[in-house]
Length: 304
Image (cartoon, rainbow, N blue to C red; front, side, top):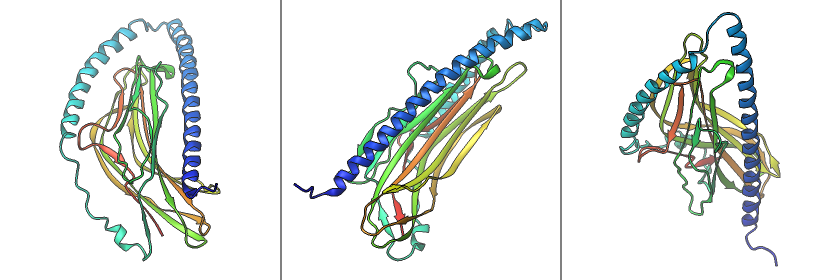
Protein backbone atom coordinates (compact mmCIF):
# COMPACT_ATOMS: atom_id res chain seq x y z
CA UNK A 1 0.00 0.00 0.00
CA UNK A 2 1.36 3.40 -1.00
CA UNK A 3 2.22 5.71 1.88
CA UNK A 4 -0.32 8.59 1.82
CA UNK A 5 2.29 10.85 3.43
CA UNK A 6 5.60 10.53 1.55
CA UNK A 7 7.06 13.44 3.54
CA UNK A 8 6.89 11.26 6.65
CA UNK A 9 9.26 8.73 5.09
CA UNK A 10 11.57 11.48 3.86
CA UNK A 11 11.64 13.02 7.31
CA UNK A 12 12.44 9.70 8.99
CA UNK A 13 15.20 8.98 6.49
CA UNK A 14 16.96 12.34 6.60
CA UNK A 15 16.83 12.74 10.37
CA UNK A 16 18.11 9.18 10.87
CA UNK A 17 21.01 9.86 8.49
CA UNK A 18 21.88 13.11 10.27
CA UNK A 19 21.80 11.39 13.66
CA UNK A 20 23.99 8.50 12.51
CA UNK A 21 26.46 10.89 10.86
CA UNK A 22 26.72 13.11 13.94
CA UNK A 23 27.01 10.18 16.36
CA UNK A 24 29.86 8.76 14.27
CA UNK A 25 31.57 12.17 14.11
CA UNK A 26 31.33 12.64 17.89
CA UNK A 27 32.74 9.16 18.56
CA UNK A 28 35.71 9.91 16.30
CA UNK A 29 36.35 13.24 18.03
CA UNK A 30 36.31 11.62 21.47
CA UNK A 31 38.78 8.95 20.34
CA UNK A 32 40.99 11.62 18.77
CA UNK A 33 41.03 13.69 21.96
CA UNK A 34 42.00 10.68 24.07
CA UNK A 35 44.93 9.89 21.77
CA UNK A 36 45.97 13.54 21.76
CA UNK A 37 45.91 13.72 25.56
CA UNK A 38 48.07 10.60 25.82
CA UNK A 39 50.56 12.01 23.33
CA UNK A 40 50.85 15.38 25.08
CA UNK A 41 51.41 13.71 28.46
CA UNK A 42 54.35 11.82 26.96
CA UNK A 43 55.69 15.02 25.38
CA UNK A 44 55.34 16.81 28.71
CA UNK A 45 57.38 14.20 30.54
CA UNK A 46 60.12 14.35 27.93
CA UNK A 47 60.08 18.15 27.92
CA UNK A 48 60.25 18.49 31.70
CA UNK A 49 63.19 16.09 31.83
CA UNK A 50 64.97 18.21 29.22
CA UNK A 51 64.27 21.41 31.15
CA UNK A 52 65.53 19.90 34.41
CA UNK A 53 68.66 18.73 32.60
CA UNK A 54 69.34 22.36 31.70
CA UNK A 55 69.45 23.22 35.39
CA UNK A 56 65.96 24.71 35.73
CA UNK A 57 64.03 23.27 38.68
CA UNK A 58 60.41 22.62 37.67
CA UNK A 59 59.53 20.45 40.68
CA UNK A 60 57.46 23.16 42.37
CA UNK A 61 55.47 24.03 39.27
CA UNK A 62 52.59 21.62 39.92
CA UNK A 63 52.18 22.81 43.52
CA UNK A 64 52.10 26.42 42.34
CA UNK A 65 49.47 25.62 39.72
CA UNK A 66 47.27 23.91 42.33
CA UNK A 67 47.37 27.04 44.45
CA UNK A 68 46.54 29.25 41.47
CA UNK A 69 43.67 26.93 40.54
CA UNK A 70 42.13 27.17 44.01
CA UNK A 71 42.19 30.98 43.87
CA UNK A 72 40.80 30.99 40.33
CA UNK A 73 38.00 28.55 41.21
CA UNK A 74 36.83 30.84 44.01
CA UNK A 75 36.70 33.82 41.66
CA UNK A 76 34.94 31.72 39.02
CA UNK A 77 32.17 30.72 41.43
CA UNK A 78 31.51 34.39 42.12
CA UNK A 79 31.39 35.21 38.41
CA UNK A 80 29.02 32.34 37.60
CA UNK A 81 26.73 33.27 40.50
CA UNK A 82 26.50 36.82 39.20
CA UNK A 83 25.84 35.73 35.61
CA UNK A 84 23.29 33.12 36.73
CA UNK A 85 21.45 35.76 38.75
CA UNK A 86 21.15 37.94 35.66
CA UNK A 87 19.84 34.92 33.76
CA UNK A 88 16.86 34.54 36.09
CA UNK A 89 15.34 37.71 34.69
CA UNK A 90 12.93 37.63 31.77
CA UNK A 91 14.50 37.04 28.41
CA UNK A 92 15.20 40.17 26.36
CA UNK A 93 12.18 41.03 24.24
CA UNK A 94 12.85 40.70 20.53
CA UNK A 95 11.69 43.53 18.35
CA UNK A 96 9.81 43.10 15.08
CA UNK A 97 11.60 41.38 12.23
CA UNK A 98 12.26 44.60 10.32
CA UNK A 99 14.44 42.86 7.75
CA UNK A 100 11.67 40.36 7.08
CA UNK A 101 9.34 43.17 5.98
CA UNK A 102 11.67 43.93 3.07
CA UNK A 103 11.50 40.42 1.63
CA UNK A 104 9.84 39.95 -1.76
CA UNK A 105 6.18 38.99 -2.06
CA UNK A 106 5.60 35.27 -1.83
CA UNK A 107 8.45 34.59 0.60
CA UNK A 108 7.76 31.45 2.62
CA UNK A 109 8.04 31.55 6.41
CA UNK A 110 9.07 28.12 7.74
CA UNK A 111 9.22 26.88 11.33
CA UNK A 112 11.40 23.94 12.42
CA UNK A 113 10.09 20.37 12.32
CA UNK A 114 13.05 18.67 13.95
CA UNK A 115 15.83 19.46 16.40
CA UNK A 116 18.77 17.30 17.42
CA UNK A 117 21.80 17.99 19.61
CA UNK A 118 25.18 16.26 19.60
CA UNK A 119 28.37 16.66 21.63
CA UNK A 120 31.84 15.16 21.95
CA UNK A 121 31.48 15.19 25.74
CA UNK A 122 33.48 12.31 27.24
CA UNK A 123 32.60 10.65 30.55
CA UNK A 124 36.31 9.92 31.04
CA UNK A 125 37.25 13.60 30.74
CA UNK A 126 36.77 15.66 33.91
CA UNK A 127 37.81 18.87 32.15
CA UNK A 128 34.65 19.22 30.06
CA UNK A 129 30.87 19.08 30.35
CA UNK A 130 27.85 19.74 28.14
CA UNK A 131 24.08 19.70 28.42
CA UNK A 132 22.38 16.42 27.60
CA UNK A 133 21.77 15.72 23.94
CA UNK A 134 18.55 14.52 22.33
CA UNK A 135 16.52 14.54 19.12
CA UNK A 136 12.88 15.55 18.76
CA UNK A 137 10.37 15.88 15.96
CA UNK A 138 8.51 19.19 16.34
CA UNK A 139 5.04 18.68 14.90
CA UNK A 140 3.97 22.14 16.01
CA UNK A 141 7.12 24.03 15.11
CA UNK A 142 8.96 26.08 17.73
CA UNK A 143 11.92 24.37 19.29
CA UNK A 144 13.88 26.81 21.49
CA UNK A 145 16.22 24.73 23.64
CA UNK A 146 18.49 25.06 26.66
CA UNK A 147 22.11 24.16 26.00
CA UNK A 148 25.53 24.85 27.50
CA UNK A 149 29.07 23.56 27.45
CA UNK A 150 32.23 24.36 29.37
CA UNK A 151 35.88 23.41 29.47
CA UNK A 152 38.54 23.97 32.10
CA UNK A 153 42.29 23.55 31.99
CA UNK A 154 44.74 21.79 34.29
CA UNK A 155 48.42 22.02 35.17
CA UNK A 156 50.86 24.35 33.46
CA UNK A 157 49.52 23.81 29.95
CA UNK A 158 53.08 23.26 28.74
CA UNK A 159 53.53 21.01 25.71
CA UNK A 160 49.74 21.05 25.12
CA UNK A 161 48.85 19.29 28.38
CA UNK A 162 45.91 20.07 30.65
CA UNK A 163 43.51 20.79 27.78
CA UNK A 164 39.75 20.65 27.97
CA UNK A 165 37.90 21.19 24.71
CA UNK A 166 34.36 20.41 23.67
CA UNK A 167 32.08 20.90 20.66
CA UNK A 168 28.28 20.98 20.79
CA UNK A 169 26.07 20.97 17.68
CA UNK A 170 22.35 21.83 17.72
CA UNK A 171 20.60 21.03 14.42
CA UNK A 172 17.25 22.53 13.39
CA UNK A 173 15.44 21.10 10.36
CA UNK A 174 12.86 22.74 8.04
CA UNK A 175 10.89 21.33 5.10
CA UNK A 176 10.23 23.34 1.92
CA UNK A 177 8.54 22.40 -1.37
CA UNK A 178 9.62 24.63 -4.29
CA UNK A 179 6.95 25.73 -6.79
CA UNK A 180 9.51 26.31 -9.55
CA UNK A 181 12.98 25.12 -10.52
CA UNK A 182 15.35 27.99 -9.75
CA UNK A 183 17.80 29.38 -7.23
CA UNK A 184 16.24 30.11 -3.84
CA UNK A 185 17.53 32.35 -1.07
CA UNK A 186 17.45 30.66 2.34
CA UNK A 187 17.42 33.14 5.22
CA UNK A 188 17.23 31.64 8.73
CA UNK A 189 17.20 33.59 11.99
CA UNK A 190 19.72 32.31 14.55
CA UNK A 191 18.77 33.43 18.06
CA UNK A 192 21.04 33.20 21.10
CA UNK A 193 20.15 34.32 24.62
CA UNK A 194 22.82 33.64 27.21
CA UNK A 195 26.30 34.46 28.41
CA UNK A 196 29.93 33.46 28.01
CA UNK A 197 32.83 33.26 30.44
CA UNK A 198 36.40 33.24 29.11
CA UNK A 199 39.16 33.27 31.70
CA UNK A 200 42.91 32.63 31.46
CA UNK A 201 46.02 34.02 33.14
CA UNK A 202 49.19 32.92 31.41
CA UNK A 203 52.54 33.48 33.11
CA UNK A 204 56.18 32.45 33.29
CA UNK A 205 56.73 28.72 32.65
CA UNK A 206 53.06 28.20 31.73
CA UNK A 207 51.07 28.00 28.50
CA UNK A 208 47.48 28.86 29.30
CA UNK A 209 44.57 29.88 27.10
CA UNK A 210 40.77 29.97 26.93
CA UNK A 211 38.42 30.30 23.94
CA UNK A 212 34.70 30.29 23.21
CA UNK A 213 33.08 30.35 19.79
CA UNK A 214 29.58 30.17 18.30
CA UNK A 215 28.91 29.57 14.61
CA UNK A 216 25.79 29.45 12.46
CA UNK A 217 25.70 26.83 9.69
CA UNK A 218 23.21 26.29 6.83
CA UNK A 219 22.87 23.45 4.33
CA UNK A 220 20.08 22.11 2.09
CA UNK A 221 19.32 18.57 0.96
CA UNK A 222 17.37 17.78 -2.20
CA UNK A 223 18.64 14.58 -3.81
CA UNK A 224 22.03 15.43 -2.18
CA UNK A 225 23.58 17.94 0.19
CA UNK A 226 24.21 21.25 -1.56
CA UNK A 227 27.04 22.50 0.67
CA UNK A 228 27.59 24.23 3.99
CA UNK A 229 27.69 27.98 4.50
CA UNK A 230 28.78 29.33 7.88
CA UNK A 231 28.97 32.61 9.81
CA UNK A 232 30.80 33.25 13.08
CA UNK A 233 28.48 34.81 15.67
CA UNK A 234 31.22 35.37 18.25
CA UNK A 235 34.80 34.24 18.77
CA UNK A 236 36.54 35.27 22.00
CA UNK A 237 39.78 33.98 23.44
CA UNK A 238 43.34 34.73 24.51
CA UNK A 239 46.13 33.59 26.81
CA UNK A 240 45.39 36.51 29.14
CA UNK A 241 41.68 37.21 29.28
CA UNK A 242 38.98 37.68 31.88
CA UNK A 243 35.68 38.31 30.11
CA UNK A 244 32.15 37.52 31.21
CA UNK A 245 29.19 39.06 29.45
CA UNK A 246 25.82 38.30 27.96
CA UNK A 247 25.53 37.20 24.35
CA UNK A 248 22.01 38.14 23.24
CA UNK A 249 22.20 37.78 19.48
CA UNK A 250 19.72 37.74 16.60
CA UNK A 251 21.64 36.90 13.45
CA UNK A 252 20.17 36.48 9.97
CA UNK A 253 22.25 34.63 7.41
CA UNK A 254 21.53 34.20 3.71
CA UNK A 255 22.54 31.44 1.30
CA UNK A 256 21.48 30.52 -2.23
CA UNK A 257 20.64 27.01 -3.49
CA UNK A 258 19.34 25.60 -6.78
CA UNK A 259 16.19 23.56 -6.08
CA UNK A 260 13.87 21.58 -8.34
CA UNK A 261 10.11 22.09 -8.58
CA UNK A 262 7.69 19.98 -6.52
CA UNK A 263 10.29 17.89 -4.67
CA UNK A 264 10.71 18.39 -0.94
CA UNK A 265 13.91 20.05 0.25
CA UNK A 266 15.29 19.76 3.79
CA UNK A 267 16.88 22.92 5.20
CA UNK A 268 19.38 22.25 7.96
CA UNK A 269 20.36 25.11 10.28
CA UNK A 270 22.99 24.34 12.90
CA UNK A 271 24.34 26.24 15.89
CA UNK A 272 27.84 25.21 16.93
CA UNK A 273 29.19 25.97 20.42
CA UNK A 274 32.90 25.43 21.09
CA UNK A 275 34.82 25.80 24.36
CA UNK A 276 38.57 25.36 24.93
CA UNK A 277 40.74 25.81 28.02
CA UNK A 278 44.39 24.97 28.64
CA UNK A 279 46.26 25.18 31.94
CA UNK A 280 45.01 25.52 35.50
CA UNK A 281 42.71 28.45 36.18
CA UNK A 282 41.65 28.64 32.53
CA UNK A 283 37.92 28.32 31.92
CA UNK A 284 35.58 28.69 28.95
CA UNK A 285 31.79 28.48 29.06
CA UNK A 286 28.87 29.00 26.65
CA UNK A 287 25.68 29.16 28.71
CA UNK A 288 22.37 29.25 26.83
CA UNK A 289 20.61 27.19 29.46
CA UNK A 290 20.52 28.83 32.90
CA UNK A 291 17.34 30.56 34.02
CA UNK A 292 14.42 32.00 32.10
CA UNK A 293 16.58 34.35 30.06
CA UNK A 294 18.89 31.77 28.48
CA UNK A 295 18.06 29.63 25.44
CA UNK A 296 18.93 29.20 21.78
CA UNK A 297 16.98 28.37 18.63
CA UNK A 298 16.36 28.98 14.96
CA UNK A 299 12.73 30.11 15.35
CA UNK A 300 12.05 30.53 11.65
CA UNK A 301 13.54 30.52 8.17
CA UNK A 302 12.48 32.59 5.16
CA UNK A 303 12.79 31.12 1.66
CA UNK A 304 12.26 33.26 -1.44
